Length: 356
Image (cartoon, rainbow, N blue to C red; front, side, top):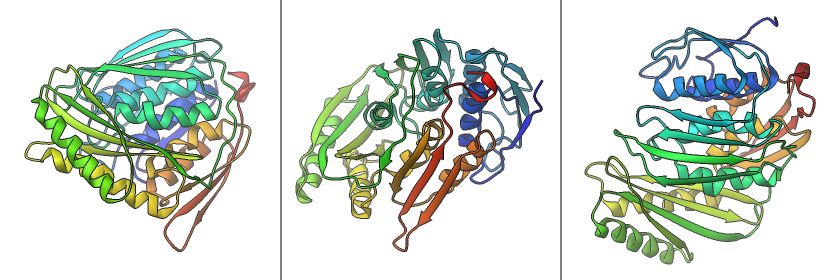
């Protein structure tokens, strides 16, 4: 058996991103991993239900042997036994943990599998510190389609903190041959779409959000298409995702409702974040900047993208990826604070060690 790659979860930003990236790459390359100091820099270190679901989801794809996988664990091993297998998968986080993050863990391995798959994940769809379901739909997956990944995404019910209970579904064609992307000059703004999501709230709440959003965008000379989503859910909640589609770039900006926070403010926050991003000239938002690392590391050739800043998340994902693949990358931090990422991917047509 191959020797274990050791991934120190305290490296860099010290959160779940190291874990998810490494799980995906272990499943793809067949290289076993020992995780230590999992989420060491978080208030509640170790595996939480959302992370444990991601671990077991990745394990299901490749029949991985697991040792030490439990809620609160700061050390465990993950040993793939097969290449990622196409199938119908269903995972339930059991809490309001973020379903999009579990989806992102399984998405790339299943996309490169030999045939199509269906993935269902139950849990939170709109929770703090994670991309909402609408972000996957309107920002993340459209960019990956440009790179040759074929997937469709949908969700019919929402999951807000603390009850969760939302459900997302992804259909993947499989057999993807990822191509490098050049997202340096974003070009003109083609479309702005606001997804106003509410569950179990009076109708006037969403209406107030719509009015506030339209007023803000009119004030900055922008036209926005609004999609109102009043979705069933076990709990109550509200969120607004503003998605920007440019000729050669995308960004998504979130406003999350919480007790005592006016809906007007929930709607204004993503507008302000969009304007801050727009002024930088970057082609992708700061979260997409680090989410592109994994797929572009698996595309044969050089990819480039501009980001509004070089975050610790981005540095951490590059480090984790480099533990599995001999990628070459350059981070060019500019005087104005923006950054250019250049990454030469490996490609996995035959798989590392013949595993894919």
